[in-house]
Amino acid sequence: MSGATNHTGLRALEPERERVFLAAIGEGVPFAAAARLAGIGERTVKLWLEIAAGKRSTWFDGSEVSAAARTEAERFGYAVAAARDRFEQEMVGSIRHAATTVNPKTGTYDWRAGLALLTHHPQYRGDWHEHREIEVHHTGEVSHAMQLASQLSDDELMAAYNALELPSAL
Image (cartoon, rainbow, N blue to C red; front, top):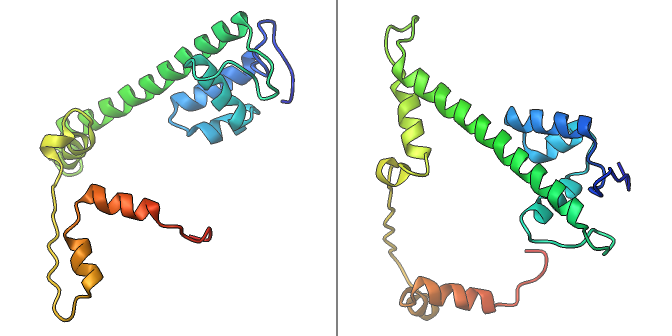
């Protein structure tokens, strides 16, 4: 919806559109698809969330965001965060349930669900993820430039890479 403003000045945030958007987010639908379902531009949703987070103080047209609109954006930001948190809680609960409930078909617990939770959960993945390292041995000729590059630290290599002027097609 272009340019419509509700009573607080937050553009295009009508209650029904917000309800549809938040319901979709609460079901795990990504922001872009949730915005389309609600008939709101993804760019507009991102703007509202930037305003809510205090990262932006103007609309796309450069006009100042009013205090009422900022308050409404903050309320919207909290509602979006709550919808995402509820979805996450529900998904973690379903994984936990799968890991701790005997499957009637197999007669066993689904240990993979618990392992998936532990290996992907931000608080536990450091202890549970599978750490893999690859060691490569090269035989044959190595150019002088390769020998020099192999002696650089990761930071030095990144600095050298960032200093390159690469064609825009890359």
